[in-house]
Image 1 (cartoon, one colour):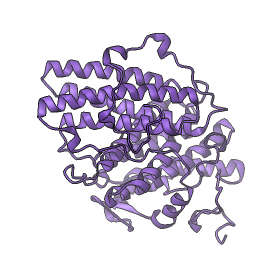
Image 2 (cartoon, one colour; image 1 turned 60 degrees about the vertical axis):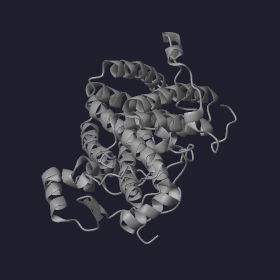
Image 3 (cartoon, helix red, strand yellow; image 1 turned 180 degrees about the vertical axis):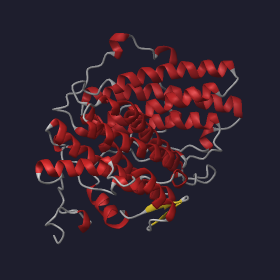
Image 4 (tube, rainbow, N blue to C red; image 1 turned 30 degrees about the vertical axis):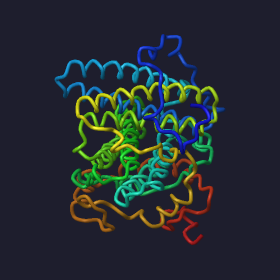
Length: 410
C-alpha cells in the first residue's frame, strides 16, 4: 500500500489484515501518549477526530446488534466491534494524560472548527454545505468562550494549544444558539442521487459532534469553579442541537447493512487521509496499521451486503477515495462566513436572518432575564484582565460590532 497515490487507491480492491490476526495484547495496546508541548496541534486534532469515528462505529455496531435477530450476523458484528474497541483505546490513549480537561476541550473545538470548515469547503451539495457553514460559526464561538475560561482558571493562553493555526475570536454568540428543537432538524440527503462524498462528509461530522456532546456531558461536572460548570452545561446543550442538526442529514432509508458498509468505508477514508499528512512518524504508523485493519472490516461488510441483500456495494460507493480530509488553517474562509452569515438562524428545515417568534420564545425560556454562562465568562474575563482573550492573527474582527471597544472603526 505504501506509495499508492490517492488517485488509484480503491479500498474495495485492497487486502487488509485477516480478522483473526487483528487482536492485540496489552503491550501493543499500551501506546505512549503524544507530548503536548512538542506535538503539532493538528496531530492532536487527528487523534480526536479518529476517536470520534471509532466511537461512532462502536455505537452503530451496538445498535445494529440490538436490531437484528440473525445470530450469525450478531456474532460477526461482535468480532468487528471488539477490534474497533481496541482501535479506539489505542487512538484515544494517544492523548496526553497531563493535559487538563479544559486543554483537551480547546483541542476538541479546534477539531470542530477546522474539520467542519474543510468539509464545508469541499461539500458539493449546496444544502449540506449551508448546514456545515451554519454550524462552524457556532463551534468557532465555543472555542472563544473556552479560551477565555482557560486563561481565567488555568492562567494560560489558548495560543499555546492551537499554535496560531486557528484564530480565537467571537463567532455567532453562544447565547443565540439556543433554538427550539424542531428548528434543529434538517432535510436528509437522498441516498439515490447524492454525491458519495456527501454521505462520507455527513457521517464524519455527525460522529465528530456526537463525540463532543458525549465528552461535555461527562466532564462538565468535574469542575468546582461555578463558571466552568455552567459554561460546559450551556455549550453541552448546544452540542445536542448540533448532533440533531447533522444527524438529520443522513437518509433514514439507508439499510443497516448499507450503513455498516458506509461506516467501514469512511474509516478507511479517514485513516488513509490522515496518514498522508501526519507529521509524527510513530503516529503515522498507527494510522497505517488501523487502515489495514479497516480494509478487512470493509471487505466483511461488503460480503455481508452481497450475501444478505443481494446488492453490490460498488453501486453506491466512490470508485476511488475522494480528496483526503485535511486539517489545515481556514482563516480567510471563516472570516468570510463571519462577515456574511453571523446573523443567520434556523426556521423549520431552512435558514432565515430574522429572529422569528419561535426563536424568541426559546430565548426567553432558556436565557430568561439573566445573562447565560457564555456571556458571564467574557464579562468575568474583562473584569479581571481589562479585555477579553482573542487571537486575531489576520486583522480586526470582520464584524465591526464584535470588535473590541476602540476597534469598531478599524
